[in-house]
Image (tube, rainbow, N blue to C red):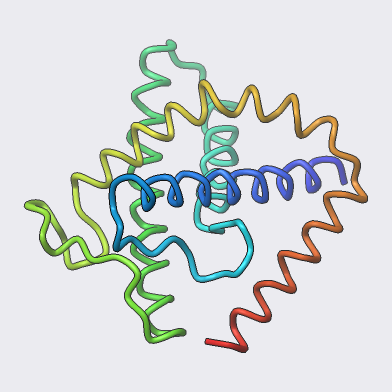
Length: 169
C-alpha cells in the first residue's frame, strides 16, 4: 500500500509542478499558451509522465547494472521517447474527447504533425534528467511526510475535478 501511496503522491505533486511550470511560461513567455484542461492547479500529463519514467527506470536499472554515464544517457533516451509518446497520445485524446487543440508544433522545423516535434522531445528528455536527478530526491523527502489521509483526500478532489472537467467540456 505504501508503494501505491508513493506513486499517487508523485503523480499529484508533479501534476502541480507541471501546472506551476506552464503557468509561469504562460505568464512570462507564451501569452497564448493553454495550461491545462482541468480546473484545479494540476496538469496530469506531468504527473503521469513522471510516474511512468520512475517505474520504467526502476524496471530497467533493477535488472541491469550500467555505469553512471550510460545510465544518464539511457534515462535521457527512454524519457524522450516515452514522454513524446505521452504528449502525442494526450494531444490526440484531448482533441477527440474535448474537440480542442491545446498545442500545435506545426511551426517548428522538426515537427511530426502538430502534436510532437524533435525540439520539444529534446526538452522532455533534458527535463527528465533534471526531474530524476535533482527534483525527485527533494520531492521524495516531502512525500514521505505526507499522511495517507491527505493523499487520498487530494486524490478525491483531483478525481472530482476530472469528472467535472469531462462533464463540462
